[in-house]
Amino acid sequence: MTPGPDPARPHEPHVPHVPHVLFSRLAVVASCLGMVIIGALLALYGPVVPALRDRFGLAESTAGLAPAAQSLGAVAGVLGFHSVHRRIGNRALLASSYLTMLAGTVTFGLCGVWPLMLAAAFVTGLGLGGVDFAISRLFLIGLGARGPALLNVAHGCFGLGTVLAPAAIAVIGPDRYGPAFIALGLLSLVPLACVRDVRNRPTPAELAGSSPAPAHRAGGRGLAVVLTGFVALYLLHFAVQSGIGNWEPTHLHVLGHGMTTATIATSVYWLAMTIGRFLVAPLARRWSAAAIVTTACALMTVAILLVPLPGLAPWAYAAAGLCIGPVFPNGLNWLNRSAPATGNAMASVIAAAMLGSVAFPPALGAVVQTYGVSALPVTLAALCLLTLAVSVALAVRPRRTGAARTVAREGPAKPAHAVAGQQETPLTSQEKDAL
Image (cartoon, rainbow, N blue to C red; front, top):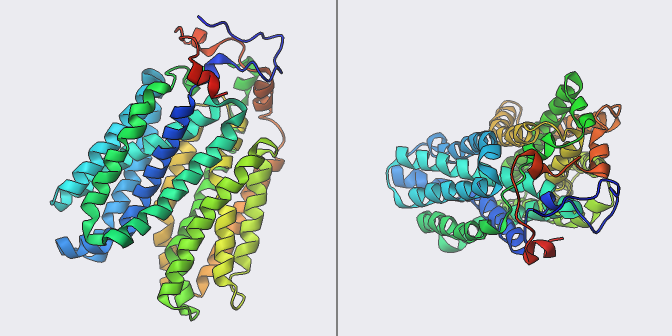
């Protein structure tokens, strides 16, 4: 068994805790490909909804049940795979998530029965949620000091998928959605084959269990308040994100822009969100996650406040996307440092974010229908201000959860695999390279 770190030398930078090295370089690249795939799957339904409507003779609302089914499946996947993570380990969690996603996408692409396709979309969402949760969680604990930066890269790759999928459908045509879903499903075989380069232990729960006692004193009412704050942060920022993505074309068209220009501007918004994550990646090792998220929320608010100014709306939306991008990955890093000993924290927050993307677009649609599309910037500005207020409240909250920094400085009291009652194999050369 590979010996654990010397507890007397907690600050030694070149001798990381062995249990924390979970990914080889190949596994990191494969996981980023997995994020591209799930991003593409989330963005693929929008362009093909008209084709589904025409093929099955569906109403608009009924055709829209497919992306809703996948989103609900993703929420269930996050919570479900989280519940079995400690029991099955990291490698099995990723493998079962990819296999579930593969089964759902291939079934959706091949079958021609609408109820079965809805079920397949839900199954796809189960796997998608598992992949998103697993990679987000394991990158933070399994890549040492590079984890926060690489989490930004991984979610930047997710953004690439959301940009590339609609472009691919525009090239091949919405009627050929079946081969597109099947191709994405088969592409998931690549990261699935690389799961063997992920260490199976420790899981996040095992690492939390091996932390010193101070990490566990973050529980109780104080921890509940912190988790509530992060859930609100993710719900609100996803409300802004999805609200712009769904209603920007309509708003720009009302302002006098052609539909082609409005559609291109919305694509630029999504691309800007992706670029924002890549740009912040180098800063994640220098700035605190709280500073990154709070600054991003402040700049996002400023950008939305500029939307009503004549001629600035497309640029303001793009600037908002640039600022929204870093919130999701860096918020997870902030959460991980604020509540490291609670296994349910990240699953709850990611599930809340996905619920926000399902619930808020119809709510904003109701606002637009009642008050007109001119009410969109005002509503988005109010949501931005609420998001900023929650972020500031979390940042200035008395350091009752400062145990996270203690854990980060001192490391686990003993190797987590010893706590879990399991022996880990020594690091391979690939895993050493991941450092």
